[in-house]
Image 1 (cartoon, rainbow, N blue to C red):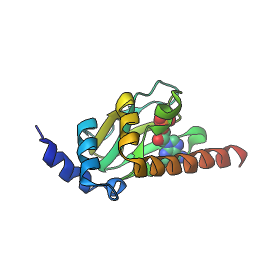
Image 2: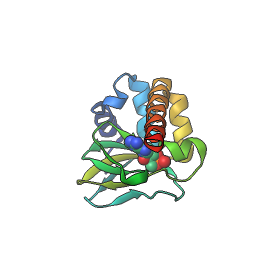
Image 3: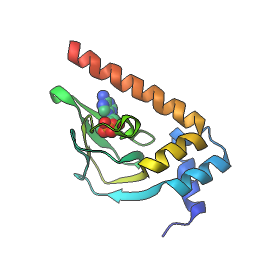
Length: 141
Ligand code: CMP
């Protein structure tokens, strides 16, 4: 088992959380669970209900969106935010490309997280806009 302080140490290594205060990191440590998964594990399935946000601590994941497009996400990146924001189904299928260490945040905790750490909310919004533009570009290509 990991204590709260070792979880904060883990969070400090994730670039996504770099601008946050110790108090904000403590709150995130309270809201997020650690999860280790083996390579090949499916973490989200396009079209299905999604109930968690995943932040990658170690390892990488493959994202398969529409039209056979794939992208790779690595440490410090996150996925699963779209379904949490609008309650809609997963927009893509995501699988562990390697063994991974993740932080998992449930739906209710996600909103608490955004309240606790506004700089994080901005980063998530910015990434989400980028992904939507990307998806639109692929539709009109
Ligand atoms: P969600 O739709 O909840 O579940 C699948 C996730 O894949 C999605 O949230 C995003 O986090 C991620 N995703 C979708 N499209 C892209 C993309 N073009 N690039 C990177 N990640 C993406």
